[in-house]
Amino acid sequence: MTLQPEHVYALLDAQGGIRTTPGGGEFWSQPDATLDALGRDWLVSEFSCDTDWASWEMHPEADEFVYLLDGDIDFLLQAPDGAQTSRRITGRGAVVVPRGHWHTAKVHRASRMFFITMGAGTQHRPA
Image 1 (tube, rainbow, N blue to C red):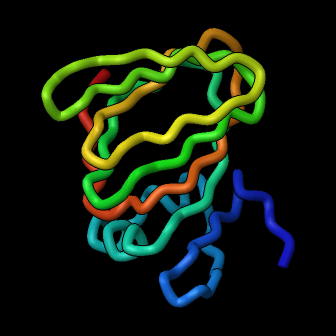
Image 2: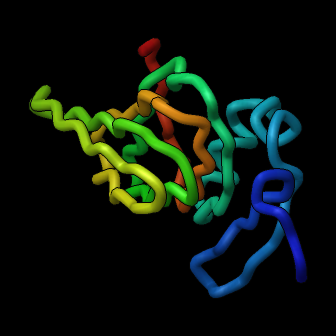
C-alpha cells in the first residue's frame, strides 16, 4: 500500500490492522458522530501550514505524537491546571502532547507536520 498522508489518512486499529480513508477536507467535513467513531483508531496524517493555527485542540482519550518534518513553530501546551509551556521546534523535531492538554501552534515559517492521534472526543476552542 502506498499513500500520501497529506491526502489519504491511515487508520491503525487495536487489532493491528491498517485501513485508509480520504484525507483533507473530505475527512474533516464528515458528521461529528462519524469522526468520533473513526477517532477510536489511531489517525496518521500530515498537514502543511503557513499561518498560526486558528484554534486550540485537546484530545481526551490519548496522547498525540506531533513530528515537525520541516519548518519553524512554537508549539504551545496548556495543562489541565492551566499551566502553559511553549516548545520551539525548528527544522525537524517532535513533541508528545499528553492527553487532556490543550495545544496550538504559532508558525514562524511554512511548516509540514506529521501527526499520530486518537481523535475520539477531540475538542476545539478559538486561539
